[in-house]
Length: 347
Ligand SMILES: [Zn+2]
Image 1: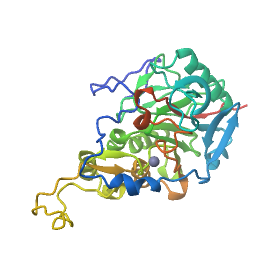
Image 2: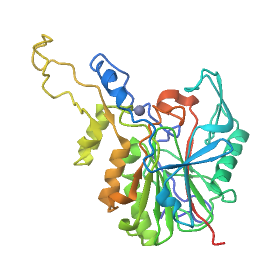
Image 3: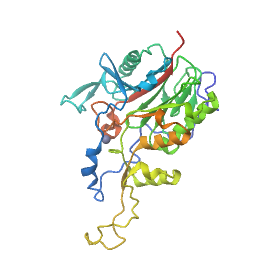
Image 4: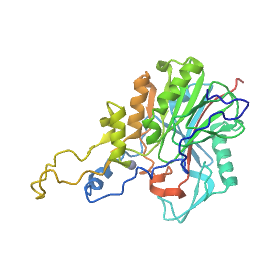
């Protein structure tokens, strides 16, 4: 039903459209007096740069993260873009140096950047991957569960948050700046997918729906799939309102495992006597920390993937602003990372 017909997007949605690729503002809760201690002991837990069996491909200042297990597949091209390099200029953002002006590889169109810069960055990114000749298929992402299957390049970007193909020569992409980029490959059926999973998409099980689409369209067996979950905002930094936690708990039996110190406000307050607060009158918790990659990994396991075939980057986009863009940290001035996957044509 969602297959593009005649090179045009068939799908039209009535769902609300968010103006940015990654909408975090809706769930964001500013630190409140009810949780002043959280910052103190959570921050050091952010993972440092890690080998984690991921490799880096560098070309002319462009740095791309890859998964060795995917690199072994000779017909596959894949990569997760990073921040450094590129021709776009960000002012006053560098987390590494005190420089006010920083050259970055912004791969998404944005008001603060020129179209020419983004196209040049994309050209460099694809060239570094050895995918210069691939038409890039990008989506108008809107935090949905919409999955498109492409047999050819659409005339215009389709509205959706995941794409899949078994056709060689197409480069599927998702753009992120904190959300989880997920790349899927079926080595047996020779099919691939790219998924954008923020909290809304994760709540709607978009990665499971992408796998379902691969099962229907390509006869994919989930046990054959390899999955790579790229850099995203970590459980160390991704503070969301308790209403987000409640929504996950209502839909997933194991959702509590994805939240750090989930507090709904109904728990007894162990310090109520010390603080001289009458029982039942302690202020309710306002926020929790969500690990989006953990949630998506759980969905992949539920879908039937083997744990050994799931590769999860532990790099946090909010902690590692030297390497990535973070909408949470940088707001609308943030750049966009891009993650891509495609099938090479036979030589
Ligand atoms: Zn972090």
